[in-house]
Length: 153
Image 1 (tube, helix red, strand yellow):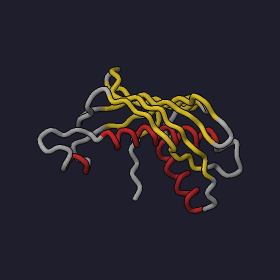
Image 2: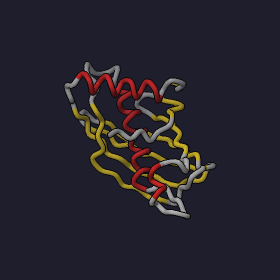
Image 3: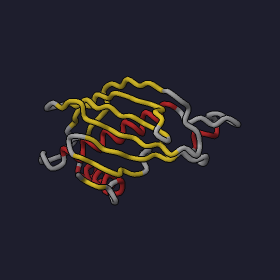
């Protein structure tokens, strides 16, 4: 099963940064048990949203540089949560590449709500070459949908 936890990517500067949005709605499955009467968006899902934006930035950047774009997979993450995220919140995320090497990259992602920081994380991604045309086609389709209205700078 695939979870798409970024609603849209607004801006991309290849090998530099990407901005994106995640809007939290009460209809999301996680709120059935987390927590009834006091819904709080799980930190693991927030971290995954941030990781997806960072991975998309890397894959969009690497796509034109390589014959077959690698899958960017999180190897390590260090996150700090500053506030709860609740239904109705519209989160703005910004991923920035800190360093890039032949087989890995380090990124930072900051998530804000109304200009207030709710979470920040540092991710280390490794690049995996997966020779599967169906997987590559599906990933291309996901990125195309996320970037339909993206501004590339």
